[in-house]
Length: 496
Image (cartoon, rainbow, N blue to C red):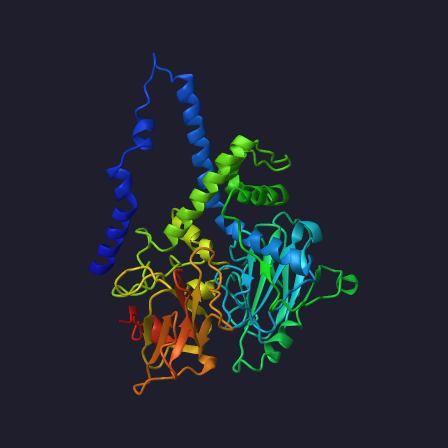
């Protein structure tokens, strides 16, 4: 704990030190002189510009989950088409040519985008043997209406969900739905019109991917009561198809946010932040047309906010006691105990922003203790010396024997600017259990990172010289040894 506090203190000093040592606009703004109790016209303009800039930065940070989701939605629809019946599947796995935040190349993905405003309540027929997530477009797990089997469910579908992997019919209602609720479904209500459908399929042999794809292709999605007349399902193969599904990190982010706000349900909880957006000209039912001068300010605000998001992602919050998985390691835990980033009396704003800067989708199976069926994500941006990982250097990660993953584990490398898979020239920027990595005599596994191979017979993930990277270590089906911390990975260490 002492080491973690020391690291946090150093990071805090690194962040605030320059501002304290070089007082500039902060002192200038706070010391603007009153003239008979009033600001001058020049200073009034200066303060109003500052207010607009601050509101734009905070609006971007608040909207980070939406921006990430809308970037995925619009990027996918541009390439694969739009509609409840379109469910792109990465049938040959997802490689670094698909630009999307922190994907996992070691599972089969299917990702669809539903519109309850356009299509009304939708039924999702989930096939047996699936593992998936349903989130709203603010990337909150959608909750069941009332208990199912004695408990309320949230987000998880399939193996960790109410159907227990047996499959079933999930009915997703719009936030403003007031009609009858028919029986025979697992019934959920979304807080947004937009719904994200995210299926993950596991395989045991990288050369045999047909079975998880076959299972996913049994999915059926259709408007409630209109199965017979619904559009035919389409499952385009998204593997190897270049698609940019990243969110903007410049001023066009506000145009994207305007599209979201104009289309979406107005949730009372969002009125305050919608007021912030309204001050920027983003109002439901009104065109968003900033002039050139204001667009320049918005562009600077978005670029500033995106940089803040990056910093938040690799700076554990002092509000979160479990910000690091282990007190003597540098593996970051992105979740503050639940998938909604909520505390009893407040929301974890920074943790939420940091997570959605580099990732998408949440569910209880990702954030809470679910032995043998959930998933856990350990992320590090630094090595054992707290230096940021650099693609020009060589490193080693040691995994002790008996990795506590009932299903499988994987290690993957990512681009720190976009969060997408590192385009390192290898077929996939990851290594997993199914690759049958070489083990040491004591059962441990060494994974090497660097621009050059460490030699024949060693597990290696290539990095790109003069480009940073970060690592996510995933455990699918984490076992008791993980939660008890009887097993823990080493830090990533420089290789001399």
